[in-house]
Image 1: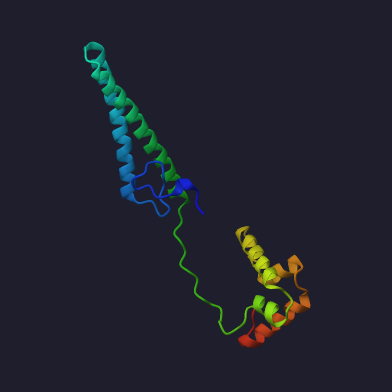
Image 2 (image 1 turned 45 degrees about the vertical axis):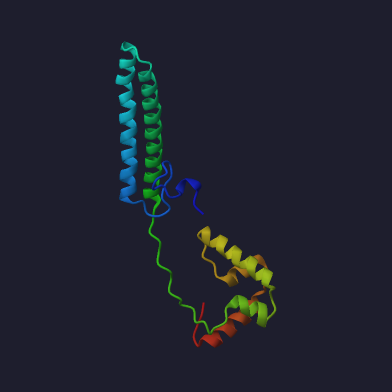
Length: 174
């Protein structure tokens, strides 16, 4: 799950798109920064007129210009920084891998649970979760390796399940 500051920001300053940042949103954010700077810059002459003039309305207008301009510019610049970070981190999603497993060949985990009763379903689930943790760490382990490492099955049980699986696939399987 991505951090909260990486949500869609088409109209909400300070947020970054979950998907590839698009040029239109970037232009809108840069426009927001430009308007903010222009408003803040406008407050100077308005305050100068308020000092020399007798109207207190110019003080209010100058204050509103200054506060709004600074807020818009700050929000836009924050969004731009996050947008740049997202652009640097963004990677296109890889297409879904082709199904290379033959669905008629039983999976090792299912064999160990249902055919050989070497595992319970809960143990298999824990082993699959551990396999995913290892994958996130960069260790692509086969389920059998995880089961052996966790001490859930013995090598002869795993070998029997793999031999059965190979006999059903009609070829060698790793």
